[in-house]
Image (cartoon, rainbow, N blue to C red; front, side, top):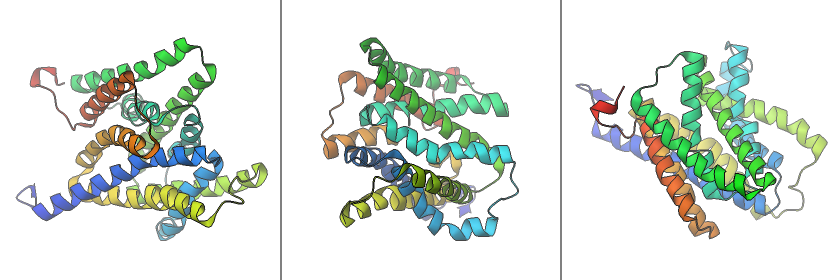
Length: 302
């Protein structure tokens, strides 16, 4: 609720807590996915674990909306870039990339690609401050890509390309979501439903890597991928937007790369190199500027 144009304190506090909950879960999703990859769970299975839970729990949403809602087909197709393809690409990338590299390549570059896509397809204006933030993100990505390029490791370079493609999929969802007129929960429900429907026959043909795993392992990964990341974080983010507004809630995304690296350090023992730390630092600063969490001086603003 608002009073005299300002958020009441309870709404502000609850909104901030919901935003923090969402970004903490999404940051933990990267090391959790790394654990699953290390245990030999295939990307197709990870994608199914990620989307089958929200597809079931959000069934009332997509049922009321309609399996084929009155949304432009192109928008629905573009929104699928955030679905199964995103999880599959990130999972494959993590086979040859650390969480720190992945955090610099995916959460950091997503706002950059989304901003460029919005400029190209929606004609959205990009001010000078956002251009500066995008340049910082570009430098962060270069810090990760150039050492891989000069190392001559073609497999690792291909994985980095897949991570950038995953970012592009998220950007496609962002632009299409703005055009669709759907709410966050409605979009998540549809993407989860379509992803599950597409993954089931793919797994039938390719086979699953989940057979023979302990009940504890299945519960852990289903909780981490589907319940927490797929459902709880999405619901928390939607509630945060309702209380804080879209731009304020989105500004918390700046915490994802750093938190993911911190979680990977304590959980997996991954120690980022000095270059990785530098890339994460300037990349996070770029994300803060692009999302509006950090505003530059008046003379640099467009």
